[in-house]
Amino acid sequence: MAEPSPISDAGQGEESRPYRPGYELVAEQLLDYIAEQSLRPGDRLPTEQGLAQILGASRNVTREAVKVLAAIGRLSVRRGAGIFVAEASGGLVDDQLSNFRPTSMEDVLMLLDYRSVIESETARRAATLATPPEVRTIRDGAKTSLTAAAQDDGHAFARADEAFHDAVGAASHNVFLRSSVAGVRRLASQSDVLLFHGDAPGSLEVAARQHLAIAEAVAAGEADLAAQLMVDHIATTQSQFERKIRDRLFNLPDRPAPSAPLPSSAEARTAPTSPPETSAS
Image (cartoon, rainbow, N blue to C red; front, side, top):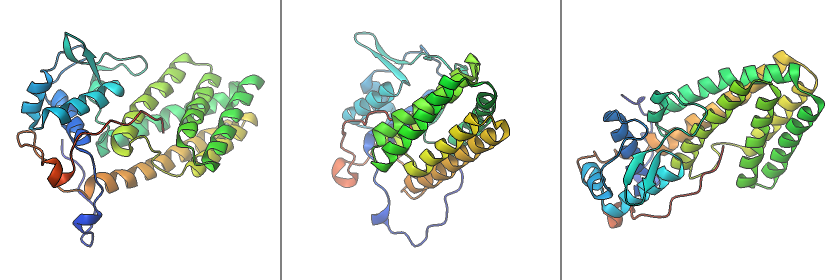
C-alpha cells in the first residue's frame, strides 16, 4: 500500500533528519512482512536467524525488534516453541486489525477517525447517564492529568489520561463502548512506542485542559457539547500525530529494502538498544 507523498523539505539537510534506532526500522519491516504473508494470530514465524535473513538485518537488531513487538503485544515469544503472531487480548478483535501498522500515516488516521466516532458518542452518553460518583471520577482523572502536565511528567500523564478516558467510557453505561475505547487506545499506544519512544505526540497541557472541559460538560449534562469537545480533543491529537509522523518518517532517508542488509552501526547508528517501555498517549 502506497504511503502519502512526503511534504516538501528541500531546505532541510541530512544532519537535521531525526535518528531512528535500527530495531525500530526492523520492527516496521517485520510488521509489513506479517501483513504481506497474511499471517494471523497464533501463526508461527521463522526463527530469529530466519527473520534476520528475510529482513536483511543482523540477528542482534532482529532480536531487539522482536522484543519491542512482544512488549506492545504484537508478537508472542514462547521459550522452546518459537515466535508467534500474538493472539488478541480483548477489545478490538477483528482479524484485520492484527495487521495494524503503528507507523503508517494511513492506518493511524483511520484509527483516530474511529476513535473520534466512538469516543464522541461515549462522551455524549456519559453526559446523559453519568452518576455523581462517575462524574467525580471523570473530574479526578482530568485534574490529575493537568497536574501531571504541569510537572511535565509523561508517565503520570499517561496513567491519568487512560483513567480519564476509561471513566468516560464507564459512565456511558455501555460495556461495548467502554471496551472499544480501551481497545483503540491499546492500538494507539503501539504508535507511541514505535514512533515516539513512549513520549506524548503533543502538548500535555493542551490535552489536560481539554479533559477538564469535557469533564465539566459531562457534569453539566450538556451532551452535545461533551460530544463536540471530545471530537475537538481527538482532532487536536490527530494534528499533533500528523506533524510528528511527518517529522519522524517523511524527512528520513529511504529505509533499506527487506532484501538488503541494514547499514552498519558505524554508518547509521543502528546498533541495538533496549526498547522503550510502553506509554499511553
